[in-house]
Figure 1: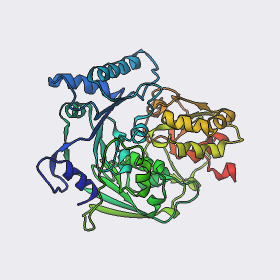
Figure 2: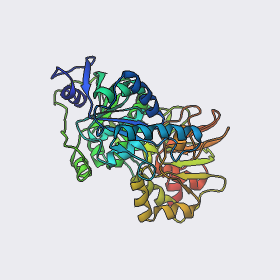
Figure 3: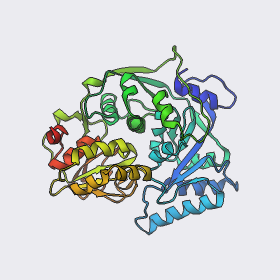
Figure 4: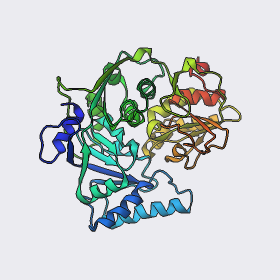
Length: 420
């Protein structure tokens, strides 16, 4: 069996082996909801007719999309989440000041672990596959049923193996590898499949970069994006893991629906043009495109590695006149470490805005919404029509080094243009 199949088989009711297409009842290790999807799940939960969640230690509620609250409606959403957490005794409810963007927060808190089945009412729950978990997004109704029972149903996905050979180039991170891959196979290239990432290039990546890749598996249509835990994974979990866990590895004779292999050393920095994450080009192919805004943050690229890369380019330089640069640390732990390292001062001295942790502009919520005709370079994960504001705006996806360099030049640029 593949890695995904092994994890599902270990959690399924009444079976020990599974194959693609099988329908399973699966026990869940962790459930997640936020201030948008949580209230809907809570409403459906009460309709079931139960009084308590199946386990208050296995449910995480993270207000992060519109928090700190931007208006009355978002305040009401967060209030419903808060009241449900209090009423149910939810252990892992995170209030403003201790929370952050959910998909950066849960790994940081040791709540997403290898070999687990994790579901969240948010499509980027697949982030935790970087730790070796079968993690995927579900609808609020399915989440409500799982909150009541601790079980969920799945159709076993076929697995696709992607191997990255060699050593990534300077400045190239997991964001570039995954954008290149999505560009190669398309936004439906892994539809309802389990992407299994591997190869020596993956082993060279930091955990931050690995989580970026797993996060964007959904942008290729995948159900999950998985990486086999290695020593780097275990070191990351040391002192964090709040439960015991089991590492699963694919069998040597596992069957894959497709296999792809890429030379990481030949992949340059990537930019995804509007309005699809698959509309990618290497930075050398990007023409002169002036921009109005840069966003560095989100559950994709708001971790410490991302802020360090941005700071390396912005240090001693200024954001171009007419460009708004918005930096959003993904969690308060990231924020504090960036403060301790002097990164926030670098951003402020450059003329950037530093936001509290929030999803904010990624979904066109607040803290950086675009007007008609405006262009942004963003380290977020989606650039659909109207994703960051007005439907006549444009979002170009890139990694933190391209975003920071573009903030300095006022147009989409490679970091070498700024730092040499």
